Length: 115
Ligand SMILES: [Zn+2]
Image 1 (cartoon, protein in one colour):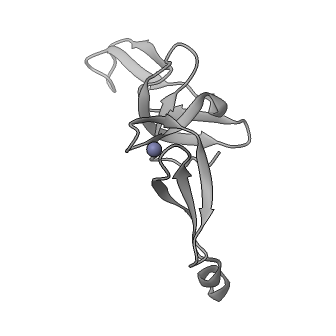
Image 2 (cartoon, rainbow, N blue to C red; image 1 turned 90 degrees about the horizontal axis):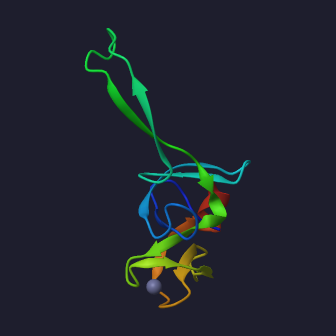
């Protein structure tokens, strides 16, 4: 699974099934991912000096990383992704359905070696 923060993913299981959102945070150790608008919980806040309005704060809870798929802009839905190695040495994510590029996942090895 080659997902990074800032990606748009679609939830494939659970209460937020079919919801698309931006990846806010990934916890690879725990296999969890936080997606904007997904797994949202509300916390009621009393009026205080810091929060004079009081009210509700919303916060996204992490969900299983295996429950999301990267969204292909061409297919406009969550898709399985493959990896393509370009001649330049760059690894690219590709949509397994339409073969569209979904961005680089690693820089050229030649460049990395020069560092
Ligand atoms: Zn596609």
